[in-house]
Image (cartoon, rainbow, N blue to C red; front, side, top):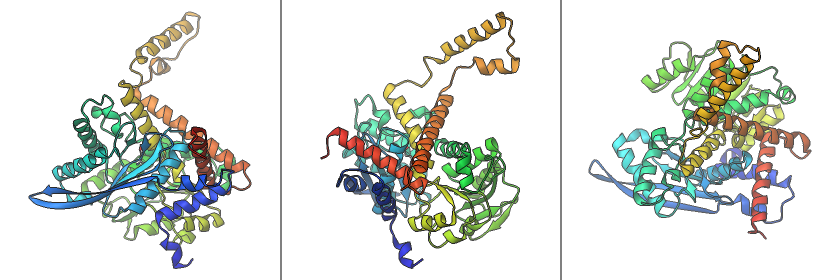
Length: 473
Ligand code: GLU
């Protein structure tokens, strides 16, 4: 591959996929071009006084599509973030929401900052000031634009943003819906933190329920015993790896982090590794595995599944030829470049695309937003009633001579908690979206990958929305 392949920006990579996907559809001329572009971007510079010194910060919030409102997408804090990246990520949000039937447009924000350089007090000042600027221009608003966590941000930052909004927009009864991914005590929802990782696992489980698809990847059976390499032990990678190991019996044989990677053919205990990382800051020195300085090299190791859960562009034209995994599950946004994908497809590697694979976060954000607008926890009015109904059912079975085993009684009696409802809704969303994506893939001659299928389905839904809205022509 020539070096020019490596020079495509993130947005160009996304748009190349868009062009191929759009060409498989019959949408009116000009509409595809409109959908592809970012509708608006707000760039803001602001000063914050830290330890008596004024520091300047720069950030963006891009709205790719507002065919449905609010537009949705995370805010990234990173020293590497730039406008191109924010625009690419905003576009991916539109496509992922459309794919999993979450009725939102697509948006994304970014602030140039290395959160490790600041203490908590400074981070709060900076986050609140950034939020203040975005709120002023309606780039944060429960009805128009609703951020969430992304790289470098989490529940803590979301709580600060929500509090800034409430202070600035007194009287907005729906203020809690201005941001998702909040702590539960601040209007968040149970299951949001694990949602993207759990969504990745639900997606993989659904893939393994389709033997035809599994066979195409050169695999067989279920997730049990599969050798998995995970890149990134942040929120997404950690939950994905943990659930795969603990609930599905997969073997996590490689873990890649910023300071290198660790490998162990017998598989890691993720909780143990995470505990080590929390104390030490990285993976170097972890005693129950082999440390590899050049972490990215571990992507090239023999394994069944690679789950890139960190950065964009980590599998590209430079390393794609060396990748041995049969299946790549894109838990991060844009981890496989367009050129990387071309090489891998030729080799027969199956890729489950980001706009499907990592959509679990925004699915549960949708549930959180609904919870905030309805001002009530899911299950609050029905849980005890369900329990009494279930109890009646058990009594009826036993009175008519049947016997319900004691081991099942408690489970059967139980009404659904918020967490159970969230997980069930997430599972359903992930299964349905996979089924529509695979059906489009298997039944359309012009579609040669899940990625194109997913993107085409998304574009079709967004196009239909614009057409029916009457905005176009
Ligand atoms: N940042 C996450 C993503 O890239 C979540 C977005 C959201 O929940 O709005 O999908």
